[in-house]
Length: 494
Image 1: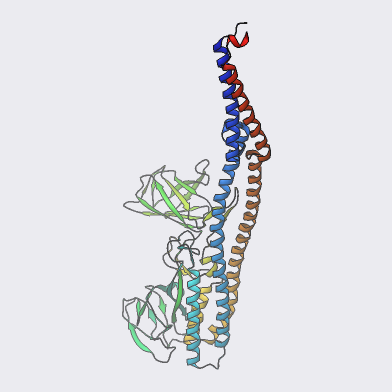
Image 2: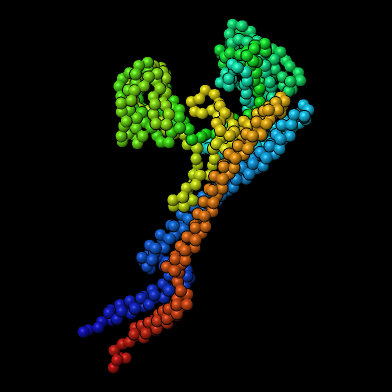
């Protein structure tokens, strides 16, 4: 076989480049302390490292969510603990006020202290984290509660539903007593009197015929037209009411639904009730709101329908509540029109692991009570059950009007309200525990992933230095040998 100079040169260059490449690769590993610097170094190992890096990045994001959840829940926990302490203080004042031997001045002093406690509770209920209210459901932009006025009625004919609205403000509870019997908004004047100092002084006034608003100094109470009242001389008893402080819940809750209309029927739609999922209502035949409405509904996005339903008066019954249709430019209903009831949500949840979302906010009315105007409701009503803010408002009124029995009842109601607050605190505490447990598991997973990635990706420095020295020696030998070969000629061989 004939060996040419070009073959010799090519072999020399190839061997030199191979030795240099091995030396450079090991030098790069030495500089980076990584065994894998590019996918071609170890395709399978590079894929493993990439997957581990992605998982570590996800864990970092989860950690940010954990930090957010921890801080928000801690703020709620602190607020609820403070409210519970304030309730204990209010119970102490109620115990003092339930004593019938106190003077009017002493009761006034207690009432002032209870008002301050109520205002401090309101501050805690409006607690924010990073500018977002944590007790207002998803309505985080504003306060969860606002100070308001409410009225408690007494007597044989007047009811709470007869109080249409209250406007203005009052620094003291106002007691109103009717002096004449009759009908609010009727043809006859009705006399009444009111006191804003616990009955020490009274102002006599007249509710003019056809009028429904009682003027009470700095505030006004509008009664429902047609409400019956009995006067002081009525044997059945006197109609009276007490205007007192209250707290109005401004956040949202897990009730009601937004209605979306698809079609050309000239009607408006409103939903009332508590809906756990979307409900779609379909009009099955042309009709009017005055006639019978044939409709179907679906709870699975239209995959299946429950047919054969009929309604009158424009009130359609669906799972969870009702859909009320009203004229809006017309009263016709066209077949095929659909109304989708989208439940109102209140929870704000963040993912703190692959499958562990945690709710970081709260629905204040379910903890503190107060007044709440539900979607579709005409007015705000007291939240059912143990109601902290309503109890506090009634306690203030009882102290300011000298109602010893009312003070005693408020003392009992405060126990129930405190229990409700503590249940809310327990819910927050349970979520805090979940966050802590997930965080501990996340730390362990992060450490395990980091160790595994290091085992796959990092270089063994002792072995690497030995190999690097060997590669450097090999490269030097190749270069020196190549130089000798390149200078050979026929004369050297002869």
